[in-house]
Image (cartoon, rainbow, N blue to C red; front, side, top):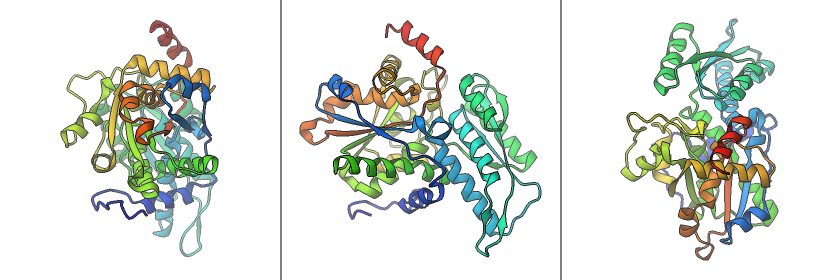
Length: 370
């Protein structure tokens, strides 16, 4: 680990946890491709070279699979090593608007099909079933994904409070194990494997490192895990920028205030970036507070415009939550602050997911004259 990296005992995971996660999920989670586009670089007009890691091509269509798989496999390893061979199998529950939901459903199915071996060499092939609490207005493509992977869906009102309350009730009444979409430590470590692969692929291509990495942020699991990974690999040589919708700016306000804040009371969370509606929590917040350099917000119009650009130029159907990071990279606030002249020429962007209702988003694009 680079000497310049400061260790923080209050952080919930370490760089080693990310490395362990990478070993655990290798061969099951995909290594997603890194793409570039000369035409997008030219449209930027500022000399930046953009590199996109396309987690929209990950299993279940998002980076969330990495975290869900690491958490599920880790849990089974612990149960097996502790000698817990329940005949009823394992019941996991989570709440999610979609991407984490599908990820947990598929991770449970895969874990059920894979025998695990404990430290004594004994195999345990416990079944794993997943119950997913989803908001009643979740995108149909994400609902269909959960159903397709065998998850049992319970619909609730579209508020964080309603989702959390129902998940808690299932844990208490049915003895399920809760896998939080962003606060679970093993989820955070699993998400951090994105940048392990990102940095290595860029090095293989150009024999150099990224100067800046832009990461979408909602609950902060992806952001926190990859912040730990980036500091572990590159120390303070890389700038870590989080991207957030203007109408859901709890991370930016928390960073500016120096304390954890939620959404403003009455915020309807009316953003096209539906995957970023959750807020930072006690595990993700300290990492972002201490190790992230900047948080930049973007408008709904810019999110849609950036999403459309990726559809057209990279030929990848990302969801608007991924478009948030692209919008930041193209925006004046980023390009004027992080200039090529100051050494920020190579910019990495995590395209976090591709589960999108294409017709709905295309209609919004048309309504915004895009």
